[in-house]
Image (cartoon, rainbow over all chains, first blue to last red):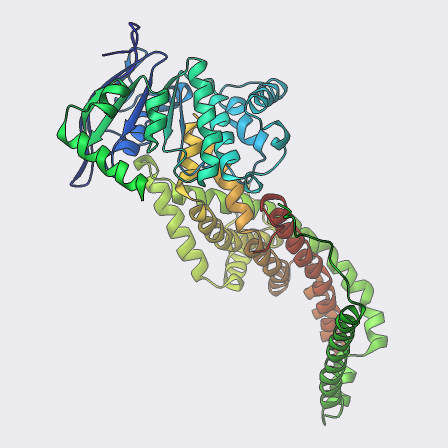
Amino acid sequence: MSANGGAPALRLENVHKAYGDNPVLRGVSIDIAEHEVVALIGSSGCGKSTLLRCLDLLEPIDAGAIWFEGDDISWPGYDVNAARRKIGIVFQSFNLFPHRSVIDNVTLAPLKVLGLGRDEAEAQALELLTRFGLAEKAADYPDRLSGGQQQRVAIVRALAMQPKIMLFDEITSALDPELVGEVLNVIRDLKQAGLTMMLATHEMAFAREVATRVAFLDGGEVAEIGPPEQVLSDPQQERTRHFLRRVMEARRL
Amino acid sequence: MTSAAASAPVHDPARLAAIAKRRRRNTAVSTVSTVVVLGVLAVVIVTSPGWPAVKESFFDVDYAREVLPDIVAGLRLTVLLFVTAEPVILIVGLLLAVVRGLTSPIFTPLRILSIAYADVVRGIPTILLILMFGFGMPALNLQGMPDSPLFWAWFALVVSYSAYVAEVLRAGLESVHPSQRAAARALGLNQYQSLRYVVVPQAVRRVTPPLLNDFIALQKDTALVAIIGAGIEMTRAAQIRAFTDFNYTPFVVAACFYILLTVPLSRWADWMAQRQRRRSQAGGGAL
């Protein structure tokens, strides 16, 4: 059940991934339409992060296919740099480059990968930083910023490559609770702009709000996928119900 | 963050006076103890039975003045050796370190060579390398190769120190968290670009103090070139004067110049490290 009728922007076909003898993904298939926001939920270790890392080709997959713009980008020998140029990823731990100022973090890839001129790259970076309220931090080094600011810079850094799809790997999990909101606002903003996104998250309320579809991952499989109101309010599977119940209980503590 | 109860600090003059008094006391203690320790040392040395003889052959001020121009002339070659060797060592060391970290199977032979290089070269005393290259290479009469023993002594220093520098840089490269490389690759940078713009700059900053340490050692080891008698650098200049007049004062003069060379380098290294900390860390370098 896709949110709209467009061709899938990204198609995962029976993706398998194991670390040694330990299977992490056991046949994941998801189609993501353009402008769609798919939220991945599931307990820690269910394979959410691995799935996103595989999508950005940071980890090779063992079997299956990842279709993007007509190519199986997971095929051995495929030009991974070309694929990564169009797929942005933001990590839980920000991973900003500590030796470069905020603006230099943002302009690095546009300068070196896209071959933009410095003026153009900096103008574009400043525009993005301004849009997300970070303009006055442009000359600062990442360690001087709060966690929420750092994560917003990391998002801007990925956006500066003008990706077709953005992947978010639990980007609020390392933040103090009062800083979560400012980062989630960025995602809301991006959804408004129509960006195709896939986000692993523990924020159920947020998943319900922004996601066009929610996928519940369990044991390396998509246990249930559908519109948020269905998966989160009226889950069909017993294990989905069990997971959501545990989440609710944890919240009440 | 000011609460309703917050107020300006009230400075009690008695408290300020107590702080000032304590500070003066600390200064007095450190001054007195320094003077006492140095004074005792000086007395022990000067009253020792051999002092007059040592003073005459090591601390002859007139003779020092006389040999000064020779030592200063040697200083030029010392600095030249050091300044030309250093950039080459850095480049070779970085190449060795990077090659050693490559995982692709194509680079396996290079990686093995890099490991062997570090193992073999670090196992040989620098003085032997200088003897072997300095005497051996010119004797080979190779076509198109320099036949100056001085060049090959310089080359031996480069060979020796690049192995040490490679190990220091390798430690630096390995200390950069893999997530940094992942973030760079995720942005579409290729392996070379990730190294060049993300991993290497962080690695080099982290190992600047040990690198500078190696360079101070190199600066002094240019003295080893003296043993093959090629070129009059500072130690060789001191040696010539010392052994013609059997007065070792030139060695002390040369030692002073070596110190004059290394101290600014150490201070510069400290300053660089501190500036880096201030720039990139919140709290102005509390670590």
